[in-house]
Every structure is written in C-alpha cells, then in structure tokens.
Image 1 (cartoon, rainbow, N blue to C red):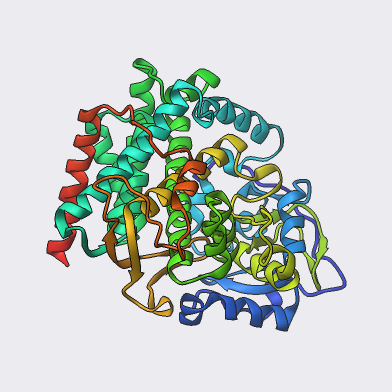
Image 2 (image 1 turned 90 degrees about the horizontal axis):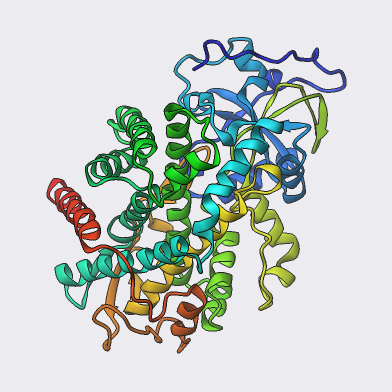
Length: 486
C-alpha cells in the first residue's frame, strides 16, 4: 500500500555523530538470539550502552535496551512516531522490495496512526470494547463464561483422548485453540466464516509456506465479516465498532479486526503459555504469587520474566534527538525492546520488584504511553489470561515439562518470541471430571483462591451448544490432521 502514501520532509544528517547507515551493525536475528536472546541483549548493552545499532533482516535499526530509554520512546509521542511515512529509508526507496516486515507496517490501521487520527480511532475502539470489559454487563459476563466453557471443553478433549493421566502440548492443544475460539466469539463470526478464519489465522501464526496467502485470505475474511455485520448487526465487537464509528468502510474495519485478531491470538496466547511455563520451570517469585492465591500477580510476574512481545512496534524519530550514547537522525527506525528493558529492570530493582509480595505492574507487555494497549482491551486480555491459566490449575492435579526448559523450541523474530510447543506430562485432579482444585501445583497452594480472583470458579457458562460444538469439531479435525501429518 505504498502507492499514494505521502512522505514527510527530513532534516539533513546531524553533526556530532555518525548516521545509522554508516555504522557497522551485527544481525540481531541469529541462532544465538533464537536460543538465548538475553545474552545478546546483554552483550549489546555492554558494547553500546542503552541503545545499539543492529541489523534486522538486512536493514539497520536502533534497538533500545534499557528500561528508562524504552519508556522515553514509548511515552514521548511528539518525538517518536508510529506512522511508517516518517521512515527516511522507506521514503528514499532504500528498503529491499521484499523486506518481510514492511507489508504489515504499510496497513493503515489504528496502531500505526499518530496524533488526532490515532486518538479518534482509539476512542471508537475503546467505546466498542467497553461492554466486554465489564464483567457485570451481559456482553462481558457471557464472554467470560465462554472463555471458561471453552477451556473446560478443551481440557475434556485432552482427557477423552489421553485419559486422566497422559501427555499434552498446552500450546497447540489448549492455548491456541482457546484463543481462536474466543476470537470467533468476540468478533461475532458466523459458523462458515469462523471456520475459514480459524484455519487461516492458524496457518498464518504458524509462519509456514502458506502464511502469506493465508494472511491475505484472513484479511479478506475479516472484510467480509465487516460487511456481514453491517447488514446483520449483533452483540459483538464488529457490530459495536460500526456503531462507534459508522464511517468505517468494510475494508478499514476488516483491517482493524485483522490486526486485533493477530494480537489477541499471538500476544495473549503467548502470555498464557509463558505464565504456565514460569510455573512449570519453577520460577520462585511466580510460584510464590500463585501460592498466595494471586493469579493476576502471577501473570504480572511471569510477564516481567518472560514478556509475550520481545520488541514492540517500530517508532520513527520525528527530529534529531540524542538517545543513549547516540544522536538519532530524523527518520531513523527505532525498535523498543521490552525483553531487554525487563532484563535491565530486574537487574537494578530486583529486591523491590521480585522478592516482595507487593503487586508489580511495571512490565511493558501492554506497552506504555499514548499507544499502549487500550485499557478496555488490556482488562479483557488480562481476564482471558487469568481464566485460561486458572482453569489449568483447576483441572490438573500435577503437570511437569517433558523437555528441559532450555530445550523448548521458540518462535523467535524481530517482534514476537513465543513457544512453538509446551509439552507436559499431566495428571488430572482426582476429584475433577471437568472442574477441580489442583492444590498440589505449588506446595499445597490453594489454586481455588486464584480461580476466584479470575472470576471463573463455579461459573455456569451461557454459551450456545451448537456454537461450541461446531468450533470444537473443527479444532478436533485440525489437531488430528496435525498428528497424522507429524
């Protein structure tokens, strides 16, 4: 979508420091980064300080490493812009035509807007999302009930296939289908469109050879969903977004839904898996929060140790500005690293942030500043994560990793770092068919208290059976097909 998009004027190269293009850079995405990104961040920090020049798939960029500098980039919207039209290298035609990260940034969508355009779109989105944020509203209650119901049914599928003790991949067989089912429910997808969307989102998130065509099909499916809900509105996010801003075209609303589906599935799904992983691998501070019955705090501490998004979306300098030990040139690309910032934060403030039982929300998993995840979406995502994690603790009496933590395979890229699989050996709680309290998870901790905090204990979900069974049937076919192909 580069054609027709104007660019912004740029200042001449600043004096007093070399330009980004003239600096030697080391590629960020290496096998070392795949296996141990923390060591790469630490080496870059010791070599360059809070900001380091790196190569992203052949394109030079500034990687922001320290917590203070990352916050500065996220909060100061007047200097650090989100709109790709501020990028000098793009405006001057110096990017490789097939650079894989460019296509997503070319989409004219809320997260890539600035100033009044961003504020208007964000208010409309927040207005549409607000009913689902409120657990006491009919929409909010039903969605929360649906999350718990879907989780219970997926765990029941595991039990039916493997018995009360067995092996499971909590990424492929639980987290990912759960988030796809929630997306279909939240967006108001009809069954036939839901099938298509679920399958293509799964292919896209896998990043396989069909990911590109699947992305186009998923975007097309979202556009058709927008048209469908315009003619047949319901009590869903798609319909409420049209109510909040009737001027949205089907294509624009389709782009908004597409990007939200990606983030809901990938980022929220990573947060579920990462929280489970930190408990399973024995992270003492995460387990301590769980033992205190603080499931929300458990998720916060897991996000500090293992954020679902390694590096947030690019920013572009609106003017020459000094950051760290470098003078950043107007139009330069900057990548704020959440994972590196958390590493820095834990190192300088561990006694307060990690060792105490006081709640900490210092993590940047939801971003910060004007472009942070809207509060309504953030609250809803937090509820989805705590519910998904809480149901595992409810139903599983025991679980242990079947691979050492350092041998787990990760999907590692310039933005997201997520588990490819989370293999466990599990034992359902002896008193649980679909519901129970797994008190043996954390040294006798009462997981029921955690579930009460998540608001899911004792819920009788109000989900239509035909809606659930259709999606579950699809997911059964997809997962059984995967096992056969593997």
